[in-house]
Image: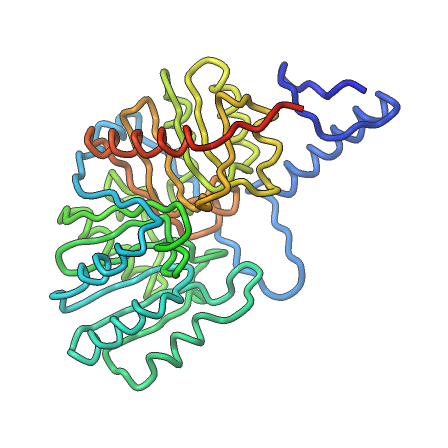
Length: 365
């Protein structure tokens, strides 16, 4: 039997003895996948789900000119020793604000408890109904911090979003924007990237975003610093524009790619420029090296790829919480930052190349 070819690419799905039936079934499968993942289609399977209203955000023609050179430090995980550095960054701040999808790291919980007992005001926002949730971390945090007046733990139930998937840490004089949750795996097992900065304008803007989410107030385009990419407000517009704008290269290291529109756009761009991507070595991604090529896509088993990084033309680096899925783009609360600092870009490129060289390419079928 011969493999199936789509856009002149060898993309083997399965084999059927009769070509007409094969063609019909393949067409039907892709149509159903596109329908299911379409940002305009809503599926609900029991229970109440929160779906955000679609944003009609559009970019001005000169929006990229307003992006600033925000400096700071990128930290790559896993690095268990860096947990202490993360914790130390929280000291000497009278107020700490955390927005995260998951928070189970016991040493960090203990650290926050001691800070609260010493008078630090701490506000935590966390997802209450995680995907395939095995335990309710929101309730666990409420119980753990009960009796401490300086700690407020709030869920995302009042927000018009599907999941609170953003990952930010805000202090008085600095902030973290992360691909990572606050878990043991973040520091000890996963490939993650965290960005630390003291940029006052971005920090002020992040405080505004946090407060609006905490109070359930609507986010507006005017709330966004030019370097911030916030779902479900401007994510799809920004990422689509940047990928379309790419002329030389697209380099990404991210958990997966399953948004139909972005997949099609990236596939088209990969034919004319240098495209390299590292995805997690999971069942979801097994077909990607076959659709693309081994010199373009590789799957990484260890450490587990949970980071979300995209580099456009070696000039603009995106770092944050957003997966390349329709739900992340259109329904979740996600936060990314755009970085144009050449030193930070060179650092990421060096780390990416090191990971790329470690991965053994999977053979074509």
